[in-house]
Length: 291
Image 1 (cartoon, rainbow, N blue to C red):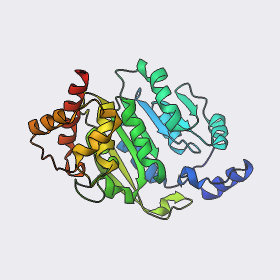
Image 2: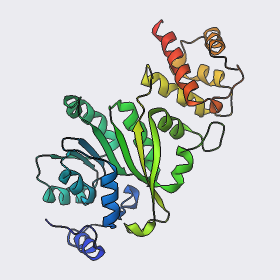
Image 3: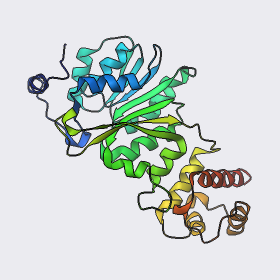
Image 4: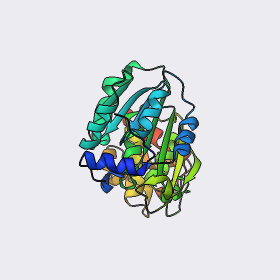
């Protein structure tokens, strides 16, 4: 099946012929700016043999480009109608379609498929729906996949959360996780006219380079970040104590850890820097390993 991804009339005909309607809940806005697609693909600096993971293949606009760049492409798609279109387009041996919800299928995919590619560059691309942006990042980071770069299109309003600072209103779990595990950089602002149908706001194309953070335990780090923001205006030491995951850490030991880090016992978790959160996580993990 040949599809002109950049022609609105042809996209409408494709949808009509296949009885497809746009699913707003899946963030289905298709890029129709060919020059912008080329810019995004070129920004990835892809080489033949790279592993490219695509979140939400849609009708295959970027899937086709990734395959033609010589990548081994693993595409995730949840929409049944798009799955049928993708199956009819791509039979290339270098393309594998994983059908279902990315949040549910990705962890199993990591365990079954990617363990054999330890020395390959891994990139992840997607245009992320606003309402699950944080969940997608957490799914990737907590899988401990050794990616090189993430390349995402996201709503511009998320920018304030990504580049926020401690003790500000936008500083939260997403800010901490992104700036712990990656170095984010905006490459382009994208107007609504680049998509069909047009979204209500501008988007940004942003790259996240893996920082390979020095974290001893992802699970301990995750539990600490949850403790920080569950009651962000309360004392951090009390939040940690109230988290069942840290029930074996007694108050005296917490006071000792805070003292070694020169942390005020009255400090609120939202004021900690990334380096302080990483250090505190590693200290807590060392204590837990002694239990």
